[in-house]
Length: 263
Length: 290
Ligand SMILES: Nc1ncnc2c1ncn2[C@@H]1O[C@H](COP(=O)(O)OP(=O)(O)O)[C@@H](O)[C@H]1O
Ligand SMILES: [Mg+2]
Image 1 (cartoon, rainbow over the protein chains, first blue to last red):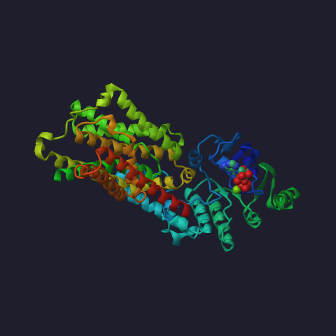
Image 2 (image 1 turned 45 degrees about the vertical axis):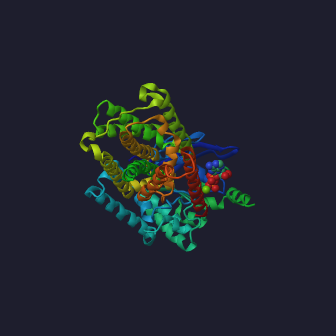
Image 3 (image 1 turned 120 degrees about the vertical axis):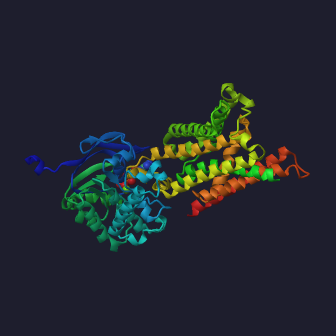
């Protein structure tokens, strides 16, 4: 490794002048950002600033109007969402998207890829050792992940019957189950019981410790301060400023933007 | 009376296979299909033409299944993103297209006059008891398709299809191609209709475009909709209900003093329509309340 590489951590994600318009609403307006490999980066900004839309564009669920997205140096803009996820870039949803009629355990067991049991041959050979062993291994891992997020006692419940906070945990659990290289977490603590927030911070640290680079949209500044080494502030679709959490907290423009967003 | 019972069993089994195909598509994966009759017709015509050319029945069934599966894959692939609303329109239109082609392209199946004298498998062997034999054969096919569907439902593939039905963006977000699974499932459900079509042709020994109108798709839809979503046994019972209603009213029209055949047929359609509306209303309320 060269001296340069040691000083400057590699960039895992680079976004260049990204824009997206919804009808008359310029949701994202020429955003550029770099995410260092191995970091935890906070993405903050007032409601409607375009944070979730940036995640949606990066993860391939929407195509940008303009701009380039590079993951590991390769262009990924224009790829369909599942192809982006296959590269190891996984997003969570701000509003939890639990698979309602599936059990909590099944919500995680459908994640690993590829599964022999999801092929037609696997259906014909259901009950064979190969499918049974695969299912056992997946179930074991799913239960481990559920234990990590404290949902192991809910494993057999219908996901629709979970509380709002538990659904948020399930969202994190699904992301853990994916073993991504870059996780985009959209407000993981919003709506979660305050007594659980410390646990959640620990879970995110655990995910990070497993080698996952994390970008987190977060309103709770306390959480941002504890987790993030770098913070990017978005306002009206544009990157307003970025820096360490301390720098951001002192920045007057940031305060103004937040105050300005309160009616 | 016994003949009538045997006929009902055969019809029911055939309808049940078509319905199981739709249950796989809609009940499991959430894929709307208002044109299941097209794949039923494709199976029937393919098998009929091949059987008349001397192809053994099992091969004719296989061919009917494959042609229906390919058409199913085609329909799935031309429907943008396989979204519910597009699928509804495309499948409805496709079924009508298939019927019109069969009606007007005389080279395929003699246009409106259809195909007659379709050979029946092992006919000489069973001569007198043939309807009974064929009923057994059809029920055997139903059992095979049923067991396959049950297996699929319990397999990891069934879990994934229900995940797609619940929220396909979640499935995409973890790196699985929703489109590939949808095309596969749609094609598989169409293949089941193709199998049923092949049996239908051999059973009646005569097929014509007029047998493959949109009402068949509606009957099948009713059979699937009155069952609990995704339930295979419920779908089979739904098919029993529908075919008893259909064939049963056909039967009693000879014994009741009022009403002509045409009137009874109209009443039947009305009954189906009312059931469909009630079921959709009940489901809609559940969705809104839930
Ligand atoms: N799919 C969409 N269609 C139309 N407008 C949208 C859509 N998604 C987001 N928006 C709008 O874009 C703006 C940015 O939204 P969003 O990215 O969710 O902001 P944030 O996550 O920062 O609160 C908002 O005004 C929102 O109403
Ligand atoms: Mg948001």
